[in-house]
Amino acid sequence: MTEVIKMTSCRQAHEYIDQYANGTIAAADAVALERHVGGCISCERRLCLQQRIAGELARQGGIPEPAPDFEARVLAAAAGRRLVRRRWTMPVIGGAIAAALVLGLALDLDSGAHEEPGLASVQEQANREVVSAEPREQTVRLAFHSRSQLDDVSLTLELPPHVELVQFPGHHQLTWQVNLKPGDNVIALPLRIAYPERGEIIARLDDGSKTKTFRAPIPGTGVRDKEPSS
Image (cartoon, rainbow, N blue to C red; front, side, top):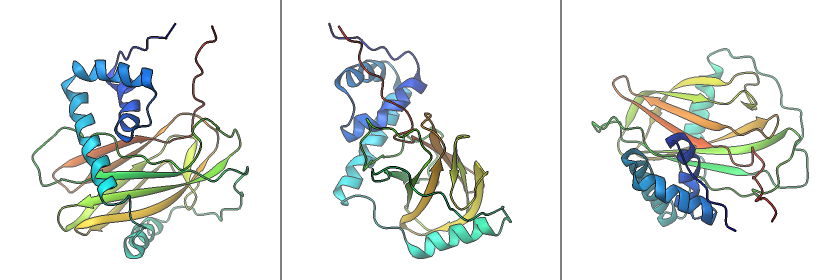
């Protein structure tokens, strides 16, 4: 007998929107999400935006490589905040290739919309079923797509307690002032994940008058629930 999954909250639905848009969601989860979205305008908007982002990334052939100038400016700005930095010495444990999480964040700070954008687009290059209990390193690419030049934008990155940036151990919230050029502004950030607990990355962009918040789950940080045996 097939288990019927119910999504009783928007927060629960948000965990599956990116998987639905990318075609990686399980059939039972897809049915449950469709039922929820059918009666929730907010989640329907999130899903529509996520599907547009996923479609645009597919049309462009995926996220481009990190722009050296943008990445250098962001990390230099973070270093200027005098955060304690320690050399990364822990090797990547296990034989699996570290997953690469890609967040496609479409910026539209010039618009008057106050609705938070949908979940960021996620592409994973690892087996989602296998989760190592050992600390590991995982690369995250943040792709900020801006329609125009945006100067002195405040970028805040929030990480769960068990995740930290390799360059800034012990810090779970970092804020930088960045300038975004028209088009894609990409930065690759290595994360250290202490243990496979579920979590999400939160990125906030503030131009002084509007704030946009983006959320995306970190893939591979939780063991997939198994269906009960019959």
